[in-house]
Image 1 (cartoon, rainbow, N blue to C red):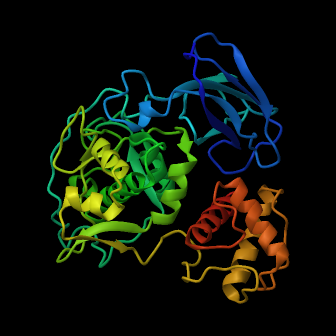
Image 2: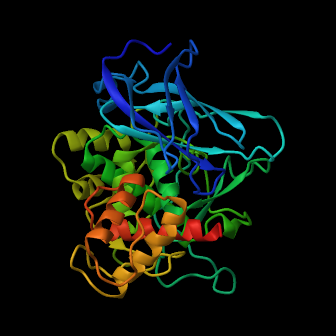
Length: 412
């Protein structure tokens, strides 16, 4: 079984009907030790398909924050078994839990009529900083763009609605392709590549490098220009670690929500910088050292100083002006109690549609007036989707409401 840990972390299970966002209430969730099989907790999901956060033992904090200290795995592993009427039972192994943080594990239950076995087993792979390392293939920071008569080159980078992830090396024709919403992809990669226990400035630096790396692949059509039908691979020898269905850490998720349209670039180029990175301990590269960034943050370095150490003093941050797949872009004004206008009406209409699937969110009159009822609806949405519960709608809240609205609308 897991060693005897004195530290604690919190784990929530979010159960949905397959890959769509529709919650499954009253699902039975058992959390067990992977070695002994003993059940540690049994809980049920609420109307939003979520369990309470369950406190569980986790390794000492220093194992995941200090380079060279992790001869012992720095996170705990748990097994999760979920069952509900009308669905196949799913056993999920390798759910990660770090100390002093909150982990969210989504469990998409297959419909009972989907065919195959009544019980499905999924084992999640180890974290990239703990699993077997891959040697990085060096690439130029600035890429040649597609020929004008070929693929379309956008005048400015945009945030795509989806990233098509090839789950293997580029030449592995047997590997599956996943269509992943852009922000979900960034969260998955960040949670696969770094630890949520790191300093906030280090997490921000790594998230910005991940976003820039991804947008460079998108903007330059790197793989499509080579005849492939995907955006990026999950092979760390070529790209970034992506583990479909992995545990998401709330501390990283909140930072991605704030930064997902921001990328690193340089004067004189139109593309996001190709920001290679490596762990800096087992593998070396010309870009950012992941463990090195954490060490610098521990010394008090700010995000931009960390990035400039690895990518040069001339880099700067830029925000993409367009986000694809959302009905309306963020207008720049924080909406709070007392706000009025069409932006408020848009939020009210979207929350009312989301409430059809998540009934814990109270429905409100779509009158364009941000009153106490709208504040309550926003706060409940923020609670369910792991945003700071401010009751107001900022950049992160606007796009999360938009993304969930689009997802539930597609189910109609």
